[in-house]
Length: 140
Image (cartoon, rainbow, N blue to C red):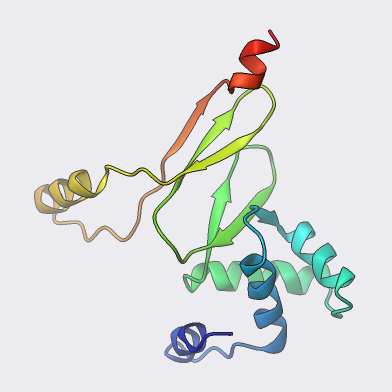
């Protein structure tokens, strides 16, 4: 596991424990947006002893510390993804629930303008678009 995570946690006095490393490794090996239950079941399948409460607490901690990002698909399940990597956003199908990521982001200029106008120091943004995917449009 990279030292970037350890450095980031160490500056805040938080250890990157074996279980936290295992949780981050689960995210490094998938492109899916995972819930606490998904992570718990994956770790259990890998024979890593951990309970659901520990998974949930560590997901919240890793999210707060900027290693994971909370993703809300408005379906009642809290999901997470790695916070590293290029900016990306999501298209949500309101019929089948399909989620498609897209990397095109033209909000950088808007962020700069808003930062100048409001004196906000903007750290990140989220763009979620909702519509009907091609499969659902065809299956009307």
